[in-house]
Image 1 (cartoon, rainbow, N blue to C red):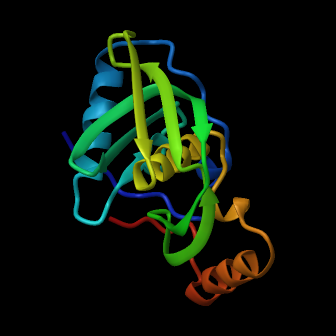
Image 2: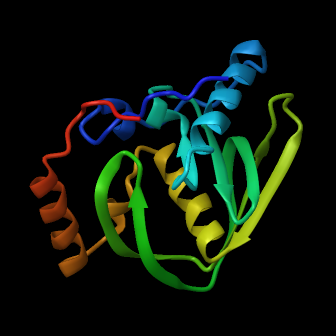
Length: 167
């Protein structure tokens, strides 16, 4: 297992729709191990494969005492409304109040291709939605409108976040 460097805003992999995983082999197991090891660092709740430069549909999470991953995730249920601050490891130093569903359920598979389902409320639901968005090339500030969007863009410009890599 390896802690992998993060890709930052400006890196094209973050804006690219990921390919579904079709090979359930040792390479996938290593990728999942690396995603889990990388998301275990303090202050990290979720991490999608593109954030470490891999264009495959996989993410890991580490929130509310739950550590895991989902391969080929898809959101199968959203309900309620939940608004709160959201940030992204690939856009460091920037956060914004971002509307999300209060409850989310994601279905996918594990490294063996067996079905898995992960559900959560509030912050866990936010994480599941945020990481699934990453796999579609969507960053959380893409969901913002009005003053929140303008504020986030100002924060990004002020920080001059680019495609440099970080840990």
